[in-house]
Length: 493
Ligand code: SF4
Image 1 (tube, rainbow, N blue to C red):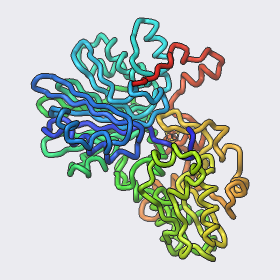
Image 2: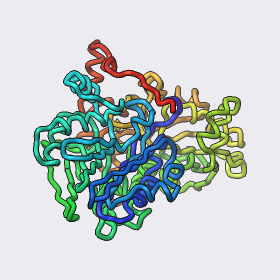
Image 3: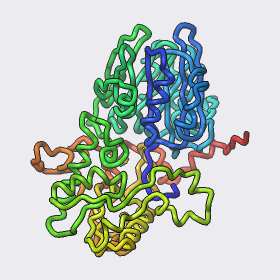
Image 4: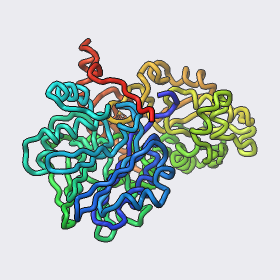
């Protein structure tokens, strides 16, 4: 990862029983664009004849699916879509999802959000038995395991396959007459169930239902499989051994859109409560004004300002029209990157002690530029407050994080980080405080604790990994690289 943020890997969407299935999926993917900006794809299906149609490309959803002709060719009343940001597997078109395969029972489209922690071991095993892989994506392992299952019913084949995999997954699968949604037993990644008229919908976040006028029925629960058949009947069951859920804490802090409801809670409300807790941990007289780093720090800054009774000021203005395509090829202006995206607002900042709110601090390079910019606009003091605890460990469950050695908080304490980024002070919310904020009913502060007790994954903060990471452990023990069975193939068309 070259830049200074954590990146969500994927967003998924599915629809069953609507004559505009592919258009709805394109809109749903547009609402989920924040979860992956590298590539998108839709596979649709006409139920009456079992024909599948697929379009996958690199780029943004608006560029790939804005042409009427593309949507018109994606016929059918069922569709599955996917937004990708890759970490496992290279970024070629062959890795763009939904993956589509022809299996013994017919076509299967599969979209995956998450990361399998034993995918490379399984891949090596499957290849040694003759499986022919078409991609380098961890998701393809699931397809091969489904293909190899001797179970008769589709649901049983999927359960067979998923019983072999370890890691985090929220999946949407589609055959010519069935739509399936399933979450791993720990429920690390979100998956929501919705309706639009008679149609059933599945999406990574509820904001994807809002854009098409759908209703968020509920979340698919950890370890639950929902199956919608050709008659439009939905069944639900729990095929895996029950474990305590461990939803990703970062979904509330950063990844999910603020207008989404995940795990029954408003992301916006949670971020405000986190900001309130930050203010509570800060105590009195830190600064004069509260300024968010837009857009990521907005909701927490509102919570901080309300709890501290300090003025909330838009001291940094974000330019929404700066694209990667503009910045990246122009090497000479790369160092202006932050100024292209953000500009400090001198009238709001001059002579003020600024409490700057951001959601995370990864390598610190962006924070250093933003703090410098706020000072340059005349701020008397700059105090950075971060609405996540220090990120000290890598994520293996679907979020792209730098190596631990590159995480600023792994090597440095708050006062050292302040020196490095040029701030007067830096403070992260405590992990206990974060749990208090997430569990706070009606302004009360509950006693905090660790991830297991609270039903969350907090591994990137605590280093306690709730799900085994077999591939990483094998490498640590000195086994040969698991990638040795994978060739590098580039699409040069
Ligand atoms: S390690 Fe961090 S980013 Fe990854 S799933 Fe756990 S809480 Fe989320």
